[in-house]
Image (cartoon, rainbow, N blue to C red):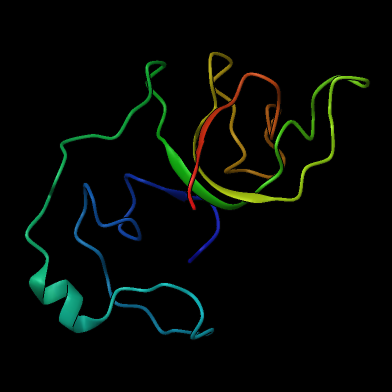
Length: 110
C-alpha cells in the first residue's frame, strides 16, 4: 500500500475512480485493470473529518512521536486510519507542523 493515502484520492477508490499504476513492489496494494472495471463507486461523496480535512491511511504511523518532551513513549509504527485532529495538521506531509502530534485521532488497522 502506498504510504499516507488520502481517502479522497484515486488510490483509495472510495470517492474517485482508481487508476491503474505500474506495480514497483508486488507487496504493495494496487488496483488492477480488472478491479477498476468492477468499480461501482463513488461509494461516498466526501471523506472529511469534523474539521473539514481528509482522513488518510498511514501504514507506518508513529504514535505521538512529536508530542512535547516527556509525554511521548516510543511505540513501533502501526497502520492507521487517521485525522489530523483539531489543529488540522496530519502526518500526510512529513514536514507538516502537526506530523504525529498529540491531537491526532486514529484507528489502528489490523
